[in-house]
Image (cartoon, rainbow, N blue to C red; front, top):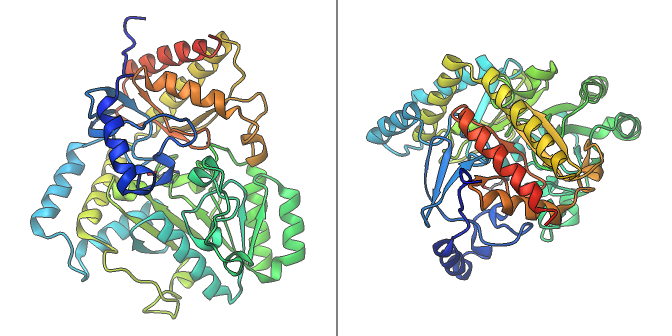
Length: 436
Ligand code: HOZ
């Protein structure tokens, strides 16, 4: 079709990738982006603008990664740029308190009602690592429950049956993590109330925390059942276990108050990242005041960081949360997500390719399987080799999707109806190619 671009020439990217691979492990600073699961060379990006990314070979891609979530309003939104520029004029880091830290904390607390106090850190990994430590300090217990296929950053105690790059690259439990670090980690299947009840009956009294992605992004998009979330809340209450929602991906993405607002479940603690930094490196953890008061210097659970609450990152986050409040992007994000989901289903059906589209608002994944995907076992029933071919079919037609079956794609508020139509035209052609 003439309206579908050809973005298959990427010679400069190939050269840069070869060069980078001599200097950086795998040529990348985070494994998920290395194209390990789909093969080929990742385009090296030169700039982003709105819904688009431009690579070093001059190709333009419609971007559905959005830096793995944070670009809810696309690249270089003027309000966010202005806030960052103004902050830069004043200084890049002080290692001392600033007014902006309390301003962002206040925004977070107002938008996510289960968070009564919050601590800023620099990444999602730091947020989950710290939340686990605080939950252990608060309960004076060691045990934690995580779910197979959920990914909470590269925290030692949580790098067991992990999703995202760990799953993509076939090392869901990493070498280098001593057995002692994971001895207190219990791994359960997602969405399985029966296993949950059994685990609590046997171990409830020694469980400090349960941590989960309340909508999973890191084994691809997997939707929780309401029963699963309600049962989690009930059991944590019964046994005095801290319920931690890892909303690094879903926070401010699936609703202004995150997945906890959407599903009406109040966790004890929440971890955040991505969107609160608007593309700058920020994470946060927060929750009930009695738990957060365990954190140093009020309490004895130690956690610190020179760059935590960095003024440039705080300015970006304040601007982002302001945009969300002013614009309420969620109805439009949901409508575009639905259009993509329906279009992908129809495109796959027209080529007789079995597909499961999982979606919550603007987060979605096309799993190439005929099995409904509700947990890790069903996610891994997908035909990942076929996914790789579909992925490249999309990339070569100017659509930039996550380079793994086990990641979610993200729609932004600046994707236009034309972008969605162009994406679906590419999807139809790319599915048809799979029969060639
Ligand atoms: N952990 C991120 C996706 N779930 C990917 C990080 C990256 O490669 O930037």
